[in-house]
Length: 465
Image (cartoon, rainbow, N blue to C red; front, top):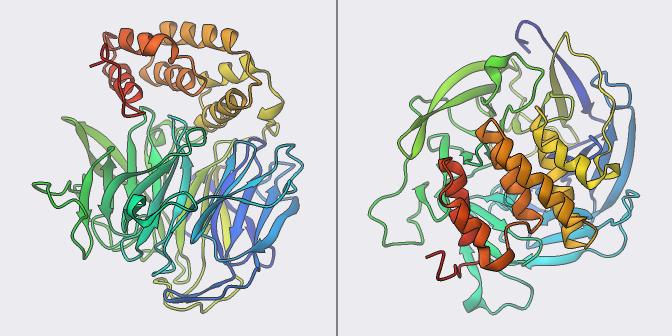
């Protein structure tokens, strides 16, 4: 690797401790969860053995290498996406999206998985549901590739009532259990993230690599016509430059230990260039222009296949390397290999490992002001879960969040307060009267998000209209 000056890279975990790792994420204790897919054979074939596993890795001393590991489960069939939160683990396991409960947080499944949705296709083994992420609005978002055809719905849903997706961004709500195709098109996206204002961005393979994603958008699509035949034209890429071929992973750097110039830059992997790259967004009208930042970290290894990016609680950037010379996934040349790398400034010091679940409601509210968005996001998910389970001191939380919304000096902190109010039910009273008030707010992003929340259930009140 060619490591940027002032940075260091460690192999946080690698073979033989993990193999064929297809996805990873963090929990609210700063531990790294890996999803390993040993069933993947080629893009057109896989085995049905229950041999895929989820492991939990923890770096106790903060040196960038794991110290302890636990096995959560090794009884999964072909799996492609993972997210931790809401009292358990969400796993994309086509044809199903499942939830494995772990309400007591003892790192052991509480029982059998619950099937939330089925009908996910697997026509192309690396183009099914992937890249799970909790949105600022409390929905679970994910990507889906164009060469897999899915008819998604709750178990038992008639074919005529299912939603079709063969490329795009989808979302699922943990309370209403509603599934939506959020945006249609693209190619084989394996990266989706939200910036500090809650705007979504996807990275893609084959077609231009960067898109600004809005709800209901119909986007440039590889090879096939879009399902919606009544649009005048597809929404195009926002990038003003070209990189080679396929991209994977997407995380805005919203932490506090990298040099300030990296704040708000989008970190992603270029799979064929075997590199970590950055782009930055310049507002233009109602969208953005995506400009090239840096060829941040060339791997100098033809087997390096980075396609997933996360930011950790200490502010490091983590990169998943599938590690195989057949980058397009037509076969597995290096079975049982995979690495997760940690990128960190050399001057950084270890942090005290977090345990957000042990914090009070008001301490979690206070984390909405944190300079590292890792804490903001995980605290918001916990507040949401406590709301769902009836364990939130809602009056105190809402009072503090309203004060934060009022006093915030930046748009980002204002929006964090608004999003937390939404997921904790603080904006729902009196038919959305508070949201209607916020339509007159001087901050355009507050107004825009208020409109989204008023229309989220697709039945806005007469006053809202």
